[in-house]
Length: 333
Image (cartoon, rainbow, N blue to C red; front, side):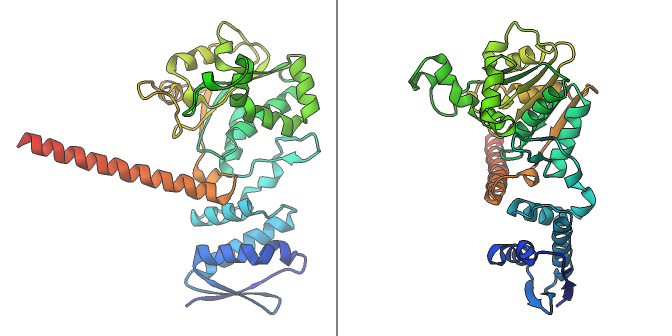
């Protein structure tokens, strides 16, 4: 059994490093299958992966020394990177600021995948952000749009979403058309309110500087000097996706976000996002950013849920394939 003694600088707040009720230490113990003992102003780590655990804790301490908050998401992310042989400390994540919220809080990419996504939006005219729920695809796109508007790079922000039911029917919802589609646009409103503040966002919306619209309302328009975001793009048809992308005018930027594992279209309809990834992959002016479950910045359980579903779908696919193979074999007899 390996044993490592890890010394903790007196400058480090041990309460933040260890977490409430030693939560962070327990996460490291569980992940690395080690035992951590607090001793002589430091930590004694025992187990086959004691060195890995010491490396994770050192990275966590380095983040605290740089003034970063060590929440559950960051702790989990440091451990995920360690599993892939990547040092969080060397990434210098805290240096890149997207923008400041209305409360003065800096918004930064929280993962390497998010940072690549931000860099792509800065450098390309059309960017596709594809990944599972909770990876910040929509929130980062809205933050980048607000930053571009504040820097006078664009004159308008257009936020669009397909109004596709996820198992329900729009017709059963109360109210007029706008009231029916507003629930589908709520995530876009929430991101706007968080970055700009509710009053500022509503004022800009009244001036039509910001538009939050169903995708169907985009047909026939040409959008110059605009930052255009299409959210939940996995629920577009190929025709809708082509229509949307051809709305782009001069001095505009387009960001398309979606999760191809959560398509709510009828079974006989193809996803415009899936097809666009095949059709447009070779164009240098367009960037495709593939975010992964390691980039999830919600509750750690969300990451486990996504992984569980991926494993289930892969297993189901193998089972179906085996069943089909057996069926063909019987038929050939």
